[in-house]
Length: 106
Image (cartoon, rainbow, N blue to C red):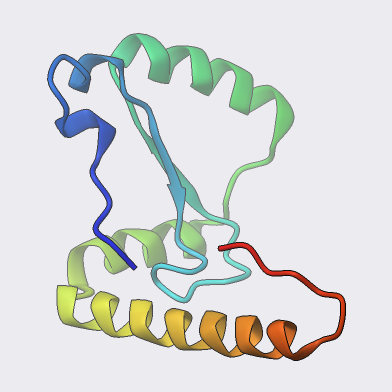
C-alpha cells in the first residue's frame, strides 16, 4: 500500500537499471501478450538478441494498442485501476484468512 521507489531514481542507478513490464494489469490488456523494456542501450541490445530467439512477435494490433495505452490513458484511470486491483486483492486475502489452517503473509 506504500509508495514504490524506482531503482533508476536512486543515486548512480539510472545507467544500471532495467525496467521490464507489461500491459496486462496496468492497462487491463490481458491476452494482448505485450510488454516492454527500458534499459541502457548495452543491456537492451543483449536482451533483444535473446528475446528474438525465444519468443514470437506481438501482433500489430497489440503493438498499436500498447502505444495508444501509453499515449492516451490518463493517470486518473491508472490510479482507479490500481484501486480496483487492491480491492480484489483485499477480498481474496480476507477469504484466505477465514480458512482454517491457512496463514497469509503479506
